[in-house]
Each structure stands twice: as structure tokens, then as C-alpha cells.
Image 1 (cartoon, helix red, strand yellow):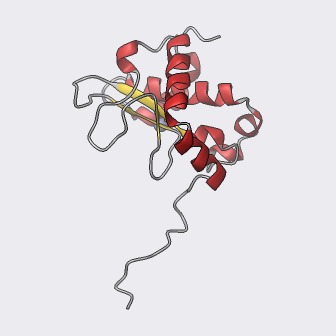
Image 2 (spheres, protein in one colour):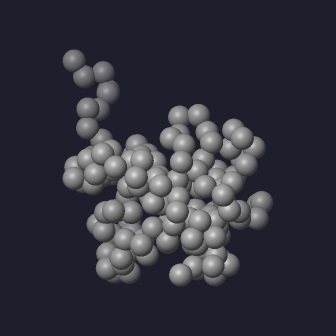
Length: 146
Ligand SMILES: [Zn+2]
């Protein structure tokens, strides 16, 4: 009997199975690599990873559904933080996959784009639409990239 519960949610993005498997198998190594990249581009140590209930700790997480990355302005530790998820491995991810620059970017550049976006969003001025602020300003952020 159908009580309104939908077994499939066609509009919810899922990682391609090979990417999901890769992220699960190498979660720890990916977290180390992405944390190192965050340090290389100048993300302060205390902003690497998010402390919040139900969110994996560390720079690389597996959100369900996947969402590129996340940020928090005030975690359970009282501090802002950012992370990146396995969507960076998907050149055809929703919305971003429509952009030639995303589809053709190197993995490093996709990771850097998500880091810059989440970092800018986490530190956006109070009262701003954080996402829009990040879209407008992430490219100008003074992260010492490269
Ligand atoms: Zn955003």
C-alpha cells in the first residue's frame, strides 16, 4: 500500500556509483589531501572541517545528497568551518555541470573553486545572502592560491 512515501526521489542528485565507491574507499586519504589543499591555499587551520551533529568531521565528507561542500558560520565548537564533498569528482554534477568551466576544469581547480566558495560563504558579512555573496566574491578572496 502506498501511504505517500516515495521509494525514489528522481530530483535528488546521487553521485555516479563509481565516484561514490571511490569516496567511500578513500575517505581518509581524500580528507588528508583536501585538508592539505585547504592549507596550501591559506584556509586557517581552525576553519578546516565542520563541527556539527550528524556531519562527518574533517575537510572531506560524504553529504547525502551530495552538495559540493559545506560551511558553517558557528559550529558546535563555536567556530566557522568548511568542507568539500565528492561532487567535485563529478564533471557532470547538477548546475555546475552546465558550465563549460566546471566540466573542463582540472580536479584541483574544481576543489579550489569549492574551497573558495565555502570559505567566502562562511565568512560573509552578517545580513548578506551568503551564497550570493560567495558567488560574487569567491574569485576575489585573498586566499594565497597557487
Ligand atoms: Zn553557496
